[in-house]
Length: 114
Length: 111
Image (cartoon, rainbow over all chains, first blue to last red; front, top):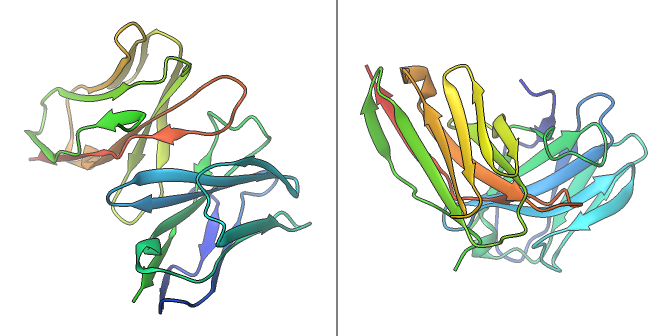
């Protein structure tokens, strides 16, 4: 158990809908990273927050947004969902901004868009 | 062409075999190289990391980086059924936390 928690574990929703995925980092970790894992694209970095501020952006669609709250938990919002958004969404956390060697991944949220 | 290429497998080997997992990459700016293990229905966990070229050993695992060939490898000695998982390579350049992952190789070690 990495100490990173993600809710919900599974989410099934329809095209066009909006969902929110939640991540609680390990105690004391300041950085949160979001990744999307699909069969054809593999694990792709979406966005990083450090202590409430956006730190780095990857291949995140404009329909997706994230934030990190004062208690350091983070939420990933996915809107106008499409079938292609079906994937595993992982959150990772690290103690500080330089998290290359210390990213601890949560168990993921499996999103199915029908 | 993807920045990082990895054979998806599956790779099926008997217990005790030496396993070789590989990735190739195209971006010569990559300096940090990592291997993650992902069990079914779990998040990835960091196995090993290396900086620039060279070898690194940790127990039954050895990571190799050949920057001239843009090729990295993970060797598993005396493989065990508990090693059955998907192995993901990941890499990054300087001054960034952004990791570029391979698609993963599924390994099955049978008793």
